[in-house]
Length: 141
Image 1: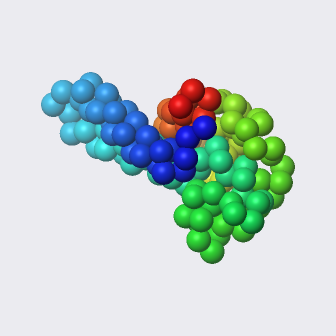
Image 2: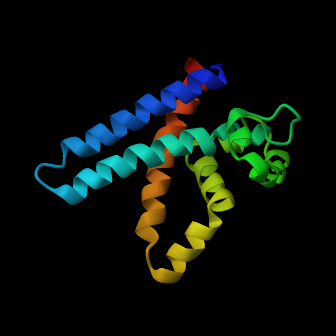
């Protein structure tokens, strides 16, 4: 089981790698270069703020991700109570989806209302990349 610091470092490097991969597909296209940058930032932010370890949010010690939410960290306490640590919240697709819907429901609602669900799918894909790294470190790191 990796420490919070290890997860944070891995999130940064995986985000850079994900952005680099997207960027390598961006030959002479400024919009795709922007997409590569956004991929890096969203993947990294997911690892820092929407970690699978938010299922520890109900514990007094909490986790790094919960502390990063500052005054809004109390919002994650019900999530922590609903999910056992390393339970469904640590399942790649299911856990990522629950944190997306629970944590970013305003984005999901807005995207649904405006017909911009591709934004949600993009964030979800970045979250899956970040979560996969977290899970690999938890189980094999």
